[in-house]
Image (cartoon, rainbow, N blue to C red; front, side):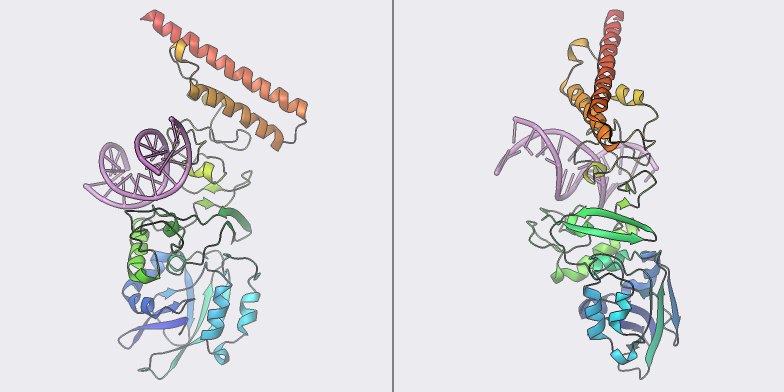
Length: 362
DNA sequence: GAGTTTGAAACT
DNA sequence: CAGTTTCAAACTC
């Protein structure tokens, strides 16, 4: 029943668990994992206790505010909350921002100790607004997914929006407990999926929490959004790790940057990237690099391959998009595109001559 | 819809 | 940490 639980080891309070859901089984199983929970979460949580709660603290964060108030209001003893629960959240949230984070929280609540303890633990929990991401909670208590949900993530003064569509997964071998599974990677339970042997559901909460921990052990940032905060001049944000594409030119949905509709950046380790904005990014040092990559030396008869044609079209489209973005008039846009086409032709001709020289030398 | 390609994740 | 394998989505036919 309690969304706020104090976990004891022997007579000593061991951990404070804030949970949005009524999941006793999970609460019972979590203590074994809580020893390094703060480090695992990488969420500095300042805990000021009237009694020594002592141990690590799990703080619900990064959950749907629509869910939290209900559980908090229904589960907490109203008399022990120093401010009305409704105002507690309304001060920090717009109720119509699904998926937004709690952000800054200051509250005083009472947590009922187990029956073996006669006292209540009154604690003040203060979350620093800049450390709002609680991946473990997010993944342990996933929010319901919505079709084509637009998530608004607020971090400090920055606001990043990205499309988050809930697609049914088709996992067959991963039990949906590895990051291969999009549902799992998004911190969601599988629902209406076509997966087989799925463990990413409420019936396998323990296995799932183990898998979450394993992922976080491998990579503490495993469940952080891959599309990070926007940089100056980067309207939509950037990929936190960058992509490693080698064959797609970062112009297909294989590329995580392209799929997220963002430009590749210098963080990416991609080869032959075509997904960047020359005006705003340092991805490539010069336009020449781009053409050199896509118009390499080849046998004359095979220079104009399908790849070359696609690359040329890509160049022209990129120019068109840039012209449109910059708000140029049609005539100027046409000129830009034609100039780009000229550059492409120049490179093709150069490639023919280069490969011809090679052949002649042979 | 089956087969292939791709690149991230996982593993060694 | 680099190389390899596994995996599921994207893509092609």
